[in-house]
Image (cartoon, rainbow, N blue to C red; front, side, top):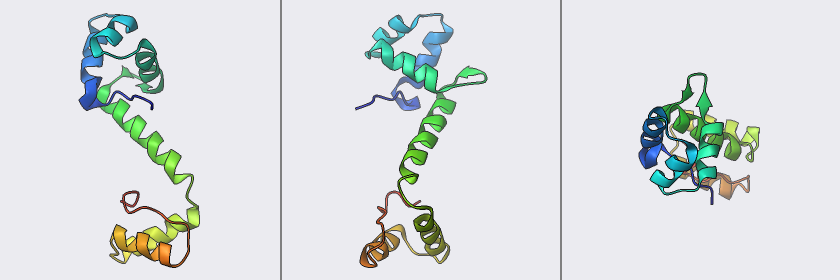
Length: 111
């Protein structure tokens, strides 16, 4: 399991400790995680202005969405979007795809 430091789980605290000048090892000890977790968080979620908790959450969320969506065919997402425009619920869409023996998409994935 990969630990991600979300804004709620310590991103703001991480940001504050960085601004206070603490090194990554000390920050990891304060957040009770491994120093490689801090290093990875900073490397993957640093923007033009450095690490920002809100921006880190947005970047991580977009990577998560892209990783999942790439496994589902573009045509399937087009069908999902078409049905959403017709006011179908995510549960209805998921059920229809399953009934039609199309690649299934969970209702949680449909927003």
